[in-house]
Length: 302
Ligand SMILES: [Zn+2]
Image (cartoon, rainbow, N blue to C red; front, side, top):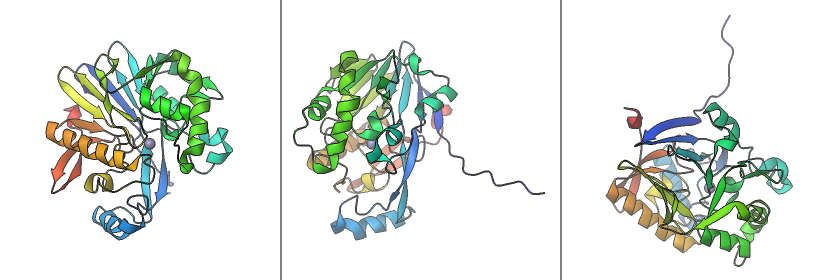
């Protein structure tokens, strides 16, 4: 008798030490998206992007797109950065088939944490895959947590001015999910601390007020750059290309260049919500006039 086929297994939880902090990255879920073209660079760059996909051995018609929240235990506080898709696809008719259910809470349990253990939830920006896990049926999923939003991003989505057509529903979601959390929230700007050791960095553009978070303990550093890169190969190799999901395209490009340059020059380790391979940790190296992604190889566990 031969063994039966058991189906796919993907790694979805990873934990490592950063100085005195313990960091856990969790793959909330993933989707398979249609090819990188024309999302990256539009029709005008389609041939170039297709060639890039081939050169990086990425299927030209489909690519894997993960969602990766992060937990930072500073020893004093447990901080969750972004929340994944939650139950959005079940709760909102418009999102059925477009988003997938998130597994963050179940995987947190596997990693040893309950929702009530979370002291602080910090949101990088207001897109559905980052705020979706904040509430379930209108109730906060992390009942004891102080919530932290970027002041500029919160204002943008709250006011709802200059929201482009493709993001109108995103704005509705934001109003439903995030506005009621304001009473348990603090609002920060680049340079401000979330908690000691975690500081906000200007990553404006992809969402008008997106924040990255610089995490530092005992001289060890990590930059969680949120969605500064939409994809590990093409975003690094062609940071100039506009991305369809960037809300302020010029600002997003400028932030990419500035943050990639800083990450490369400072040799700082990076984590990204959509970076690969899981756990989405690595380094940025200058390569010609652009950059390349060097994924970490368990060097953190030596
Ligand atoms: Zn995202």
